Length: 143
Image 1 (cartoon, one colour):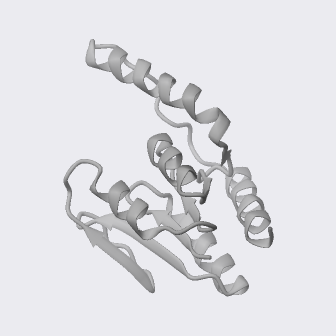
Image 2 (image 1 turned 60 degrees about the horizontal axis):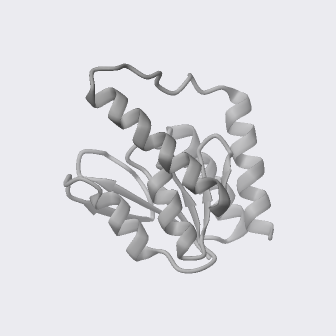
């Protein structure tokens, strides 16, 4: 088992939680990001900036039983198909049965934005988000 972090858009607090919990549990933490980001990690994979390049590198790096931390619903869907666990930085556990709805919602919002519409961005992170994420990560490691 390893923890693989989609580090392109991952909050620094979440990276630190992953490092600390991974070290305590003896689970290696891998980070994957484009070359535009300065990430310090024991196992860091730097990719180019082509669309979806980070996602493809993560999908190719994971094995069944790994934990993937991502905000990207498409990537979560792909790694669930590879029998990995997918967890958002807010502590949401992605489930295969939720993916059709989430991917349809993503497509609808993208079409709306292409047509000139505006959608809300993510809300500000709170300490409760960090606690929820850490609890979910610990729970997944112990299973």
